[in-house]
Length: 491
Image (cartoon, rainbow, N blue to C red; front, top):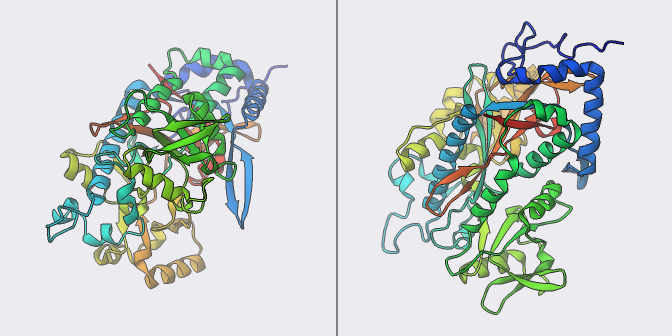
């Protein structure tokens, strides 16, 4: 029995990255043709089963909280990879690194101890005094945490690790849709995706030719974390991954990253104060000093967890930083730079702090706390995507073009009552890739999560292990619930 060609009936949209509308594989995807057509639909289904089994064996999962309950589910991996030419990856990496540098410069400016010199009357950050950002955008941002000033040692880049979500548009342009500077996730999922695909379908990986090894990201991450060690640290910095444990949505990734970095995975209950003001962790029955905590722990939870001495975790860490004995990666308070309102000003931050033009585009965004910007879109909410300023991760987002008349009326009333609580953006339609859905390949929207690490000199390096996320429906939303694809950087 001859199995059907899995690409024969693929309904490729005009902006599909892999397949033309007449059924041909584009560019680098042509290298997959012998394997995919050789598999046929039956072989593709078999490959998908092997991939799912391998991913389950690695316990790759994500979690979510709703109504006080946590739901943990597998994080699916599609068997068809995404292929990025090396030149395309270089463009993306340079743009992500540029944003990371600019955002760290902004955080340093906004959280400069005491604002400016003690005797200065004008205590606003430089970016405000220069008229680039309005004063209220910094001083009255819901993401600003005054206590975070003392949680970084002098000169420390506050975002050691940053994440950027990037999409490719139908015009072939790469656009950043979000920045992540608090506890950015994704690297562990990218490493697991590649390992699973390599084990489950080695013939597919062999067809890829010369590919970048995602594991090259691990020493880069470790080197980036080492730069967060305080100046008093001598020798090789001792690093640990700090987790809240099973209650965290990315618990799987915390375990994997500690393992590949070769460092302890610790919780609040493992941390003790040292006589010199630093911190040590209980690991396998022994106390080991820690110079850098890779903090995979939400800012808002730090004060809620207690150490064995009864001290709050937040207090213990802050005292150790102020004593010059600990570096946090990332420093709390970065919400000031990565909320949806801050996103609107990143291009201007790049121009102001770096003197450069943005290498990657941004989605046109209106901060509705600004009266002129609210006036510009007041009658356009039906065309735009509206997100609460406090809606981290897209929570509360309303897509105007998808609303009914009644939903639009409610949205208009809600935003009009308190426009300062919202931002509005132009909709962005990403490109698609073939994904296995109910036994056949179907186009699904994809984005790309790229992580980067900061250096002491103000630079940044993109990690060569990007994560492609897939929408679980034929709409450009719900990235995480759709799973992932292995992402190949091809020479």
